[in-house]
Structures are given as structure tokens and as C-alpha cells.
Length: 263
Length: 261
View 1 (cartoon, each protein chain N blue to C red):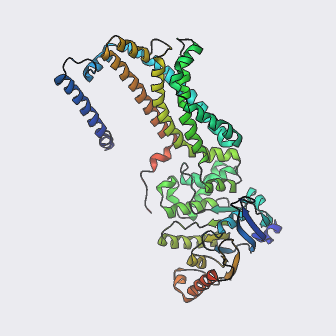
View 2: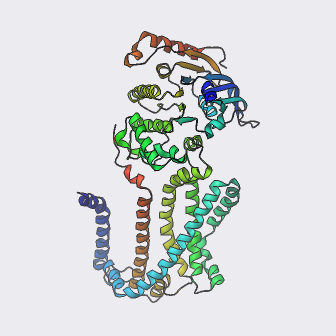
View 3: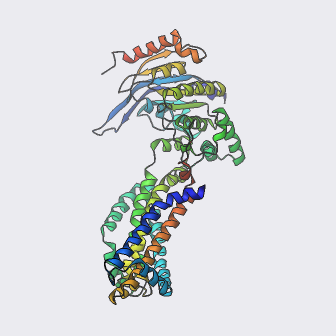
């Protein structure tokens, strides 16, 4: 127990990923990635489209196996961590199941883990309160707006209280206003649940606003360009308009534009 | 309120349908009085009422062929698509074979099946219906079982779900709309297939023989009445399928009334 708490949330050592190995359409997606994510940290992976940031997240989640290198999550192999439900995950498409009500969607992981009906219902209610959708448990996903669906997806990912939350461009399909609102909500949830968050995005302001550390990736093959700490303290509405915020945004933008490493 | 809404929804086809029948009636009464190749609808209806006992027996006889053929075709189609979605080997072995079978004009096999099972046996007719129904069900259900967004599969894997759990919780519900649109097609196909197959053999109290005999004796009105009974089976089946669909997929009915927020 203590051992897993001391281990970093995610540890990647010299990881590379090749798709279609040995075939004419072979692609080197990720090259020599070493990265460590601390417990309760909020880290963002940013890079241009096709830089392999989603692949990187799927490697951490044990949904893909690395071609070379090692991935450990809470001190276990990524695959073992997946089997032990060490993390929750949310994608750009909310990925809710149309045929289950909002409440049943949140209950799904708990159901698969063999929770009793009563406990499931109880926890789903708590999660609905956490994402402020108390009245919508009985609705079907497609009756909800995009932002509400994403909140359900987050509630579902956190329903079994995993110590890590992986998010793959979860707000990418939302309009700007909803998006900013969701970012604030996510930070509140992060603060309340003490979860480690690994967040993939291609929005610079989003990365800066959300995270304690921004990891900048190069275009294909994905490599780590830079790691920028973002020491803005607690975020609020004014953060987005502060000079410090713009400084960090500029720093990330320049890191993304760094000429070396670009093919 | 609900009554008027429903009426509003069904009235356009009702008006067009009744208008069409009225026009048909008028044209035959005014333009071609005494015509018998295409009788006016009122006479067809009258014949149907007059011959209700023969027609009812025929509806039961043909209906049995349709239902048994439909059910067996659907069961086989669904079982094979589950196999195909689970095992690559099954996919490679079965799918080309199914496509090949669908390329055969199945109805044309009816006389051959009659030779196998005996001229008056209903087995040949059931087999024709089954083979015809199987294909659309198999193709569509397979598509529904396999066409699942990758994110949803990954999500289930992230919960440590087994293959069976992924099938039960994701693939099967995902396949439902595909299955039901196939079933709607299959239901009307089954009626057509049964009646045409009956032209070649099988039980003699069914709709197919009734149509042939009446047409052969130039009793066209009675032949039309039998055709009308055939459409009634088709419409009845369609209504049952729609009702099953609404029962099996309550989430689809809810979609039309979205909430903003």
C-alpha cells in the first residue's frame, strides 16, 4: 500500500511506439519518451495534431503496448494497472452509451466491478452531485448538451475513485464558453478528489490554465520538446486575464515553435 | 392533446391513401364500367368479406410459413453474426459463403425444394423464406456488432471488462438499430417469398394457391382479395416489428425530446 503511494503516478522510460512494424506503412509515432508524473499532479501534454499525444496517453492507460521501453502506473505495469482499475479515462467524444440512462452510465464501471445495486446507486448520486447534474440521472445521454455529456463522462471516469484520471482532449468538441466553464469545473473536481490528472490538448490557453506542468511535444515522430512548470497558484476567473497567464501562454507557444527537432 | 398529435401524424398518409382508393373506384366506375381485370376496391373488399372463411384459413396457413421461416432465418442470421464478430476464422469462412448464397435467386429454388420435401410439404416454403430472410439479418447485425467506436471498446477495456462483457454491454445494444432495420426488410420479404413459393407447391389451402386458382378461373376480384389478405399479413408483421423495436430500444424514443443546458 505505502509502496504504491510513494511510486510516481506514471513513469515512462525510453518509450518508443512503432505502428505497422515491418510493413510498407510503418510509422514511428513516439520516439524515446521519458516522463514522470507525480501523485496528485495535474500535467498537460500539448502538441500539434498527429504528434502522438493520444498514443502516449493510450500507452499510459495500457490500451496500447510500447514497442520499446517501459511504462509503469502506480508502480505496476500499465496493463496490470488497467486490470486493477488504477485510473479512469475520458475521451473527446464523451463515449456515453446511448442505451443507458445517465445514472446507468455512471454505474457501469461499478457494475463490472461487482458492486451491489444499492451501493452503485448511492455512488452514482454522489458523482452526479460532484458534476452538478443531480436532476439528470434519469435522462438518456442524447437528451443532454455536449458539455453536460462530458460532465457525465468525467463522473463515470471518477465513479470508482481511481487515483489517476486520463483525459484525451475531453473539451475539444465544446464551444469556447462551455469549455472555459468545464475547465473551472475540472479544477474544482481535481481539488476535491485529490486525483492525478494527465490531460491531452492542443489548446495552449487550456494547457496553461489547467496544469501545474505543460509537456510540449514535437510533430511526428513525437518527442518531448520541453517541460514548462506553470506556477500560477489557485486559478480563478481573473487568472485568464493576468499578465502572468499570458507570459506562460507565450512561453508554451515559443516552445512549440522551437526550430530544432522539427523535420 | 395526444390524440390530435397522433391524428396529425397519421392523417397525411390516410388522406392520400383514401383519396387514391376513391380515384381508383371512380375511374373504374365511370371510365371503364364492367371492367374485370382491375376490379374497383369496393368489390375487392366485398369479395374478401364474402370469402372470409377461405381467406382466413389461407392467411393462417401462409402466416405459419411466414412466421416459422422468419424466426428460423433470424435466429440463424443472428447466431452466425455473433460467431463472425467473435472469431476472425468464422468471418473468413462464413461471410463469403453467405454472400454467395444471397446471390442465388432463392425463389427459383422453390421447385427444387419441392422435389426434396414432397410437392405438398410446407417445408420447402419455410426453407425459401428462411434463406431469404437470413441474409439481410446476418449482414446488418454483423455490421452492428463490429461497427463500435474504438473509444467505447477502449473504455470497456479500461474497466477491465471481459470480451463477453463488452459483447453484452456494448456490441449487442449497438447492433440493435441495425438488427431492427434488417428485421423490417425481412418481414416484408418473408411474406413475398412465402406466397411466391406457394405458387410452386406446399399446402393447398394457402394464399399462393388461392391466388393462382382464382386468377386461372378468371375470378380476378377473388384473386385480388387474396392479395389484399397477403398485404394485411405484411402490415401486421411490420406493426409487430415496430412495437418490438420501441420496446427494445426505449432510448431511441427519448432522443427526439432533447433538453438544452
